[in-house]
Amino acid sequence: MTISTKHPLSDEATRELEEQFPALAALATNAAYERAKRSGQTIVLSKNGFIVAELPDGTEQILSQAQPRHKVTPGVRFAIGAKRFPISETD
Image 1 (spheres, helix red, strand yellow):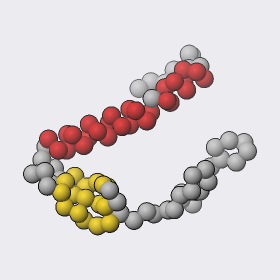
Image 2: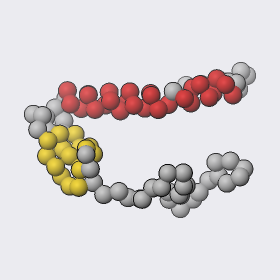
Image 3: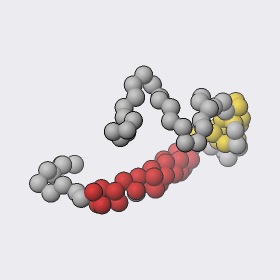
């Protein structure tokens, strides 16, 4: 993909494209899941608080209880990793 600097996108066009990211990510994730199921792969996922293996024959095997890595409080930021990059000038 070539990036053109002659005709940069407007802020509105960029915002509209960025708003599509979650839906496109969900579509890609679902497509990968379905492809793996069709090809007879065992799929490991989180379901109802457990890590579960979905076997090719359709049965599910609980592998372990899912443990949260971080306790998250809505509205409170926390840094992941060693570096924290500001999101805005006020950060």
